[in-house]
Image (cartoon, rainbow, N blue to C red; front, side, top):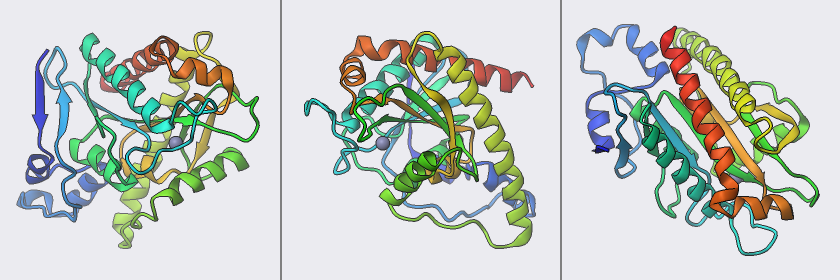
Length: 280
Ligand SMILES: [Zn+2]
């Protein structure tokens, strides 16, 4: 399998932007070819694993937390969210690479701290066709268990979803606001509606694939206003693989075999989602 190292700096030099960037470019800057963007400094290099056929969309998998941000502790004391998200993200990337239908990259491949904006920035600069952020849940109630899929929305689906998004958003500070120019704001809004709709479809597809194979929460599709999903500027979901505050879920999530059914369901849903979208 071919491996390509794509320097983000190169992507920036080629003026790659996300949906909103393209919309802005349409206003007049596109024809000059010299679009200058306000981008944060490059976040080291990101390895893109090639597909069997050229030109396939890039799936960006984002293992939540990392480095000085460990995420939630596991019940047993032997696991941490940041390690489990990384292990599972690598397994998902390996499986997608093996199947060869999409290109795939990770926001981090080791125990590194990244801000939410850096994670979303990688999605924009790679022009990822799909962004999937992986997390592990935790709750004071030790009986809470099962996987949840969150997709982006203005309005949270429950008070709990709103609290969760607020906590995730607060974790790494506020993120820059939308452009204030009214035309830009309108174009950004149209792109955002589309992004939310496609993301919700992806979440539903993930749940259909997972049903019967992976334990899900009673209302497994939740909505909330996650900055990291919004700023990725591409269809994006946040997957909580299960509760590491629950003994059974933790025991399952700390082993490769235990994670495998969810990894397979995610891979199949990702491929089906991208195939459906490219056929339109
Ligand atoms: Zn998390």
